[in-house]
Structure formats: C-alpha cells, structure tokens
Amino acid sequence: MEINDILNMANTISTLVSIILAGLVLVVTMQMKNHTRRIGWFIMAICVVIGGLTIQIMGESAALENKDIYTKYSYALYSFVAPIFGVYFIETEREEGQKWDGYFWTALHVLLALLVIIITNYDPTGFQAYTAVLLQYSVILVMLLFSSKSIKASAGFMAGIGFPMITSLAGMGVYGLNITGFGEIMLLLFVFFLYQMDTERDLMVKQVELSNNKVSLLMEQIHPHFIYNALQQIALLCDEEPQSVKNAIYAFSGYLRKNLESLTNEGMIPFEREMEHVDMFIELAQILPSKDFVVEKHFEITDFKIPALVVQPLVENAIKYGIGMSTEGDKILIETKVEGGYIVIRVVDDGHGKQTELTTQKKHKSVGTQNVKTRLKILCDGEMIVNRSDEGTEAIVRIPEIKARSGF
Image 1 (cartoon, rainbow, N blue to C red):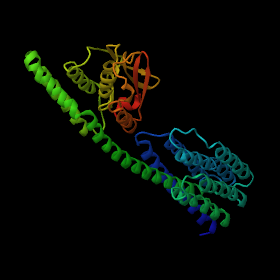
Image 2 (tube, helix red, strand yellow):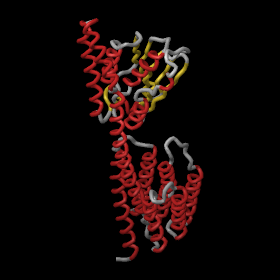
Image 3 (cartoon, one colour):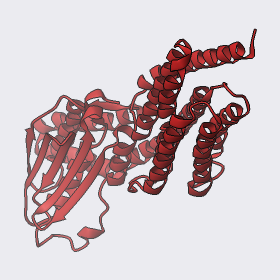
Image 4 (tube, helix red, strand yellow):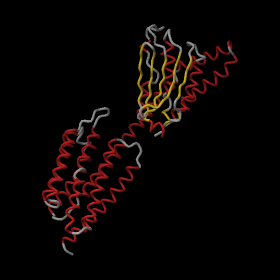
C-alpha cells in the first residue's frame, strides 16, 4: 500500500469519526434545557465543524483535480471555529450584568480567519495553510492567558486548544495529512465537558443557596409574634363574634399549612395555588387588628407557574407597611399581564401617603423581599422591582414567559 493511500485512509477515518462525535454532541446539546447565549455559540461552532467535515469527506471521494476545491471550502469553514470559540470564552468570562467586552478579540479572530481563507486559496494543502491555522490558535492561547479571570479556570480550555494546534503541526510535518477537523471537534468536546462541569457546579451552589433561602423564608413568614397575635384575636372572637371563629381557625391553619408546604416545593407552582395562599392570608389579616382594606384583582393571565411564596409576601408588605402604616389608602391591587416576553405580576397599594402613623416607618424591613428576589433568580431567572412614591408602593415581578409557561 502506497503512502498516499495510507494518508487518504487516515484522513477518511478521522473525518468519519469526527462527524459521528460531532453529531452525537450536537444531538445531546440540542436536548439540553435552558439554552444560554453561551451554548448558542457552542452549537454554532459544532454546526460549522460538521459542515467542514462533510465537505472534506466529499472531497476524499472526488476526482484528484477537484480535491483542492473541496479542501478550500472545508478550511473556509474550519477557520471560523476559532472566532466562535473566542466569543464562547468571552461569554464564559463575562460577569453577570456586564456588557459584552470582547470586541477586540473577536475582530482579531475574524481577521485571522480571513487570513486562513486567503492563504488556503493559494496553498490548500501546504505548509502555509497549516501555519495560518496554528497562528489562529496561538492567538486564542494568548487570549486565554491575558483575558481569563483565573488561569486555573482556563486550564481546561488551554488543554483543548492543544488538539487543533497538534493537528496543524502534524499537517505541517506530513504532506497530504488533513486531520484539522478532528482537532477542532476534540476542542469542542473539551468545551462541552467543561460546560457540563460548570453547570453541575452552579446547580450545586444554587441548591445550597435555595435550601438556606427556604429556611430563612419560613422564619420570616411564620413570625412568633404573628402567631401569638392571631391566636389572641381568635380568642377574642370567641366572646365578640363566635360565629367567625370557625372561619378564622380555617384561615389560620390554611396559612400555616401553605407556609410549611413551601419547604417541599423544589420547583415552581401554578399561579392559582399561590393565589390560594394569598386569599388565606388576606382572610386572616382581615380578622386581626388593622385598618379596613379591599383587594382588587385584575388577571389577564393565570395559566403560568411561579416560585412558591412570591405574591403572598408582597401582599403582606402592602398590608403591613403600605396601608397599615399610612393615614391614607385602603386599597390593594393585584394584577397579571404579558409584556415584552415576560409574565408581569404587580402588587400595588395606595398607602405611604404624605402623613404616616409611625415616624419609624422607613426603618421597617419588608417581609421576605430579599428571599423573593433570590428565589425568582434561582428558579426562573426572574426579577422583582419595588417602586415607592407618595401615591403608594408598587412591587413588580417579571418572569420570562417561556419559563413561566414550562415551569422550568
């Protein structure tokens, strides 16, 4: 068997193996839930490599005079894996909420990709083409060294970069050997496993944070003094309004049960179930010593899910620190709507007027506010905003519609 036949066999085998690996990774990635922008760049890179591998395998079976054309097209696709990987890395390093800051590196990677295409057009299988590819990944390596938040955290990326660099060196040393696609798919396999490790680590951190949050939330929701006041008021009802005692006990027990159930809610619950808890709290609050108030509900949508104990603490704040501490106001509004791809929940009170019954009003800490924000962020990537004014207080919860609909 001649050396050319051996090289062609090696090229064909490496290309077929790479196509199988790339296809498997692509299928697994597409089935993952909660795709981020980072994983979107990864999917794009996989598709680009599959395109290059497909063209390359077509070239292996083409006539000898046409092979260079297929090689040029396959390298044109391979050359854009490095820029896409660069963007993926920048998205990985980017702090949450920080604006995208990789314009320099991205522009440089794209220019190098164009350089590879130009050189390959004149030298599709020669030394210069592999040199250009090696230069591409050398610049990527420099980016990892200088732009990484932690060299230790980028060690996996650096190990993955070694594969396309090694296959480029192999192509420079053995004329006719073209396993660039295999090197790039091995790089993407490293990236995939690193992403899985990051996801599992983040999940563990979120589970611990959520567990701590649940305990804290329960302690804030079931105040000893609140239980004491509720039982005292129920005792007074036995003398003053005995016909109301039964309903008061039902409301109180239902309120406690819903709070305890929140400890077992790992995910999201239907909005209607959360409103059952809200209604129990309102019924209980109306039998305790407080101002008279009314609750209005304007629901454009109810068939969605939210984390447990999100609306109830906001209603409690409106009763205690809104109309409860104000000389003005007696109305609470709860509404839902779809707006700009988000499910929006608003809890508005018309208290907090210019005059208040307590001068220490601003010193009071809102019930469960931080816990609500934490649970929204962890469970559904939602957010909560509180706006205060002389006209009242408005609490706005925003949950991405796709997550509110699916419950994931």
